[in-house]
Each structure stands twice: as structure tokens, then as C-alpha cells.
Image 1 (cartoon, rainbow, N blue to C red):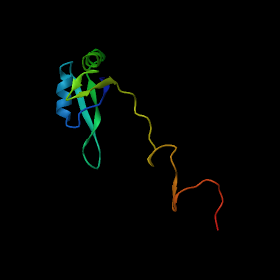
Image 2 (tube, helix red, strand yellow):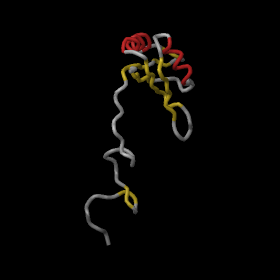
Image 3 (cartoon, rainbow, N blue to C red):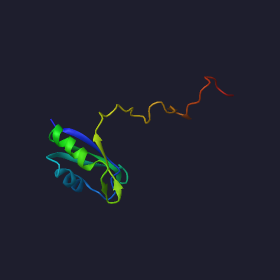
Image 4 (cartoon, one colour):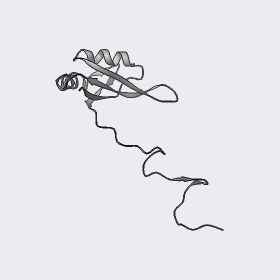
Length: 110
């Protein structure tokens, strides 16, 4: 099983192939992904790379974290497990009802 890495502060022009090529210098890349906005298909400036082993992942962190690529300083570290998301938006945010955003107070205005 591979080791997944988070790669942040990517140049918006960097694509999956370039990301994979950059990490291949440190070992076997199992997968590379640049996260894009669903609507615009434009890069969000971060991605994930899965390296074949823990040693290769650590080598990639050592070699690429803090490195300047296209004028941006990369952040490379171990990816954290994805936290659960509520399908309705941000957790703890305002709840929407049939008449817009629900207001506290419990009473009706007449």
C-alpha cells in the first residue's frame, strides 16, 4: 500500500502530468492528482500524490517541501484522512428551510 502526500501552494498552471514528473524523481508514483474547481475546471492550487512506499514518501517530503516551483514555495506533507462532510454544506452553518435561512427564537412574527 502506498503513502499519500498532500501538495500545497501549487502554481495554477501545473497539471497532473507535471506533478507526477516532479515526484517521480523521488521514487515510484502510484497516482497524482491536482484538485480542480468543479465549475471552472481550474486548479485550486493543491493536490495529492501517492508514493509506492513510506521511504519514497519521506524522500519526496525532504526533497520537495519548501522548494520553489514556478515562483511558489511548495508545501509537501503526509495527507490527513478526509473528514466526513455533510452533504448540505458547511457543518454548523445556518440551516435553510423552505423560507430561507432559519432564524432562532422559536416564535412566529405576525
